[in-house]
Length: 250
Image (cartoon, rainbow, N blue to C red):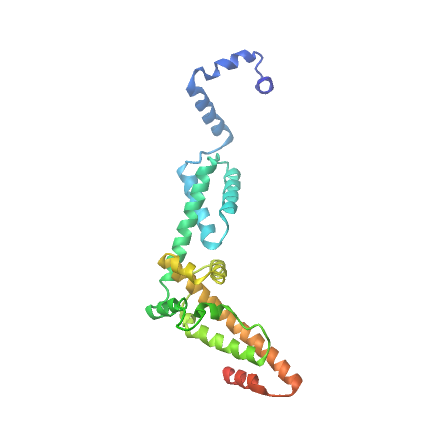
């Protein structure tokens, strides 16, 4: 108390006991401090709108975690001289905005495939009679050996991925980073996880995964072909793999 009094030039510290006698004094002084130093309240409509718009743009374009968005929002408020709200208030705002951005992403992606493409994507989760794995599991597991058999498996995988027809879907309006994160999550999720998702999120996740699988299947088939070609060249035998690769490229 004495330290604060010295800063304010108050000689008689005892008079500070009367400060709380009038409740409005503290509010008036706080308003005066904000006015003098140019601070704005968090509930200011203009600042609130700018913050929400800024957060939503980041949430839509990137996949930053809530804690990262919270820290970035705090730094932005401090920089713009906006009085910080309670932690729970800002945390709820960040969570709500991320949910809105995610809902928009799922809605847009789920509406892109045709009815036929949606049926094909759903079939990925079905385990055929007598089989142990779904088509989704088979597509996610690429060849592990650079042999003739591995090349044939890579080509079959590429054909299966292309048969989904997702290359016709225009994803230009979707942030690439969001698609990568969604596909990365889907690449390790079990079929039961997809089935428990809300319809729009499940279809959006399947579409992102199918597009990623088609791209990676093509690259892996190319790498397997080059590796098999080197192996064939070393042995001096044309082999089944070279013939299959030639047929595929034609």
